[in-house]
Length: 110
Length: 120
Image (cartoon, rainbow over all chains, first blue to last red):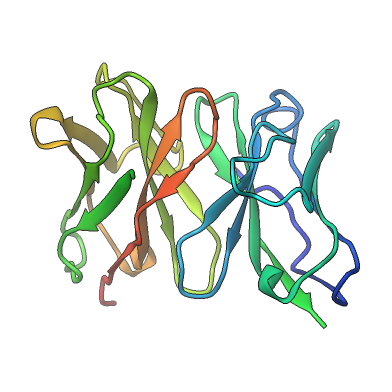
C-alpha cells in the first residue's frame, strides 16, 4: 500500500493559520471517515490530535480542526503557536483492513 | 493512567528474527475495547503501520510486511509481541506499540518507542 501524500513542509507566523493536506485514494480516505492526525515533536512519540476526520480527543485545543472532501483530508491549525512546531502525520483505515500513514509534514513557526 | 512500554534487543543480526514485547498497564488487553498495534519509524522517515491484534486473537497485517510479521498476545502478562523475520538493514527503526480503541479508529496511547538496529 502506498503512503498518503502530504506536503513536505508548511510554515506560518504566530497567530496565523496553516492547513496540511493529506491525499489518498478511494481505497482509504475516500472510502472511510477513519482519518486521524498526529503531532510528533523531535525525538518523541506521536500524539493523537484528530480522529474520525474531525473529532478532537480530550485535551486537544480547538485550534486544531479536521475535514475531508473526497480522497483528501485536511488539518487546520488556527492561531499558530511556537509549541505547534513539529512533524504532523495523517492516517487512514484501508480496504485491506489495515492502516496507512501519510508522508509527514514539518510545520515551522516563523 | 494507561501506559505502554516496549522492550527487546536493540541489535539484531541480518536474516534473523526481531522480537519485541509491549507491556500494557492501566488497561486490559483482553477487554475487547481495543486493538493493540505495532508501528515503526526509520530514522528521519515517516511512520509505518505494521499490524494489530484483537482480544480474540484476530490479527491484521500490513500487506507489504505480511509474509514476515507475526503479532501475538499473552493476556496473563498483559503483553503483546511482535516478531519480524528475515530482517535486513531496511528494518532498522524506532518501533512503537500503541492502543487503537475500536471506538476511535486511531492510536490514542503510544509507548515511548524502542530503537532496533540491523547492521548492514
